[in-house]
Image (cartoon, protein in one colour):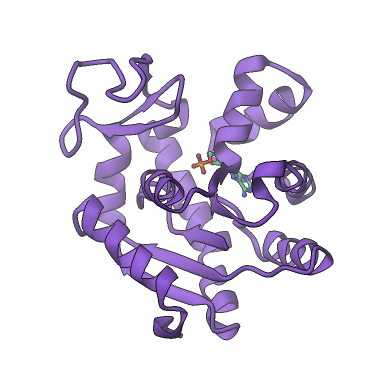
Length: 220
Ligand code: AMP
């Protein structure tokens, strides 16, 4: 099963992708994580994408599509995966459809996690991420048991450079300009499911799971 999680930065895509991929035994593929790892390593890709990420801008489609396609060729993505943060433009969505059809496969469902803008701003400004396993925390709504340490792997927690207020505003603007049109794209294909992202984390994952189990409940 190939599942796309759509939603603005801060909607909870990473958290939900982690939960759903665990429940279904599917790989969690996040282009943002792949780019951040490259920046940490300071390799060629990392040097290429760093500037875009720091400004809250999208990495060019050509680069992003190449990185994603290589990742999809991994053995753990042969029969499915949870895509988190990809696609983010219409061009990426079309490229994904093409790649999938060449493999004789298709995206099964795109789940849109809906959260109002004011709530997104609040969430992003208090967000902490594990340097080792990328698990997200929030200083108010989901703090770690030990300050600065990941509950899951004990890794160090840090604040992403692009979670600064000005960058957050730019990322949200980019989202509404470039990524929101994807809702229409998947809706027209009858593949869009909507979930209220303001609900508790477990409630959101429960609703996502029921959409995945019952393809017939997908809404247009
Ligand atoms: P994320 O962790 O998904 O919020 O992504 C962090 C940053 O990585 C974004 O602000 C973009 O600069 C870049 N990025 C991640 N995924 C994509 C994508 N699908 N297309 C273009 N840029 C991306």
